[in-house]
Length: 154
Image (cartoon, rainbow, N blue to C red):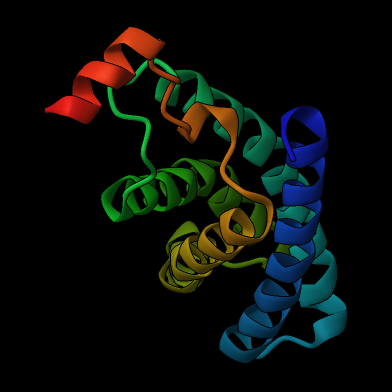
């Protein structure tokens, strides 16, 4: 699966599972009821969906220009951490406002999410790529037949 279809399936599955994890985590850590943390998780998810599409598009734009396009463990770790760190810029003010807490308390709550979401992101991406294959940006370009023959005899 490639292109926009892949992105829509990816983002939809990623965010539905992520919203469930976020609601449970925020409820547990904040002491607030799920009726409060659920809508907050929905807002977080809405922001994350938009950012996820933009971030992955930019990541694939960068990735396709690399000499090696293989999605190594290191590349997957950088992808997951980069997504979460950039997302936090949007989320801390939202969490503080929604729960009527300080920016520091919102950071602490979001930090707890930052510990679990990159792990979830790493596992999700690994499983997703295993089920649907990697995008074109992560596939090595085919070598011309003359080069293939030369490398086969080496």
